[in-house]
Length: 77
Image (cartoon, rainbow, N blue to C red):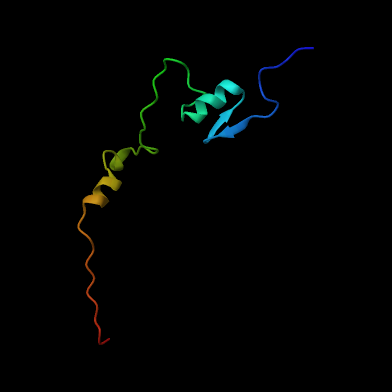
């Protein structure tokens, strides 16, 4: 009778999918159990990259630096 070291169904601990006890212990320390030992974590990049006339525009950064919109209200209208 062979004893498997993996769980019959993967479980989730702190948002990480765990397949065995080692994965669970790493997930409890908020370490990614799927990450390879010694491998660097990829740097977050933009989800979308535009080309053509939209290349080089940073819409999120530009919107954050823009002045707030000032509305004038006519109270007597």
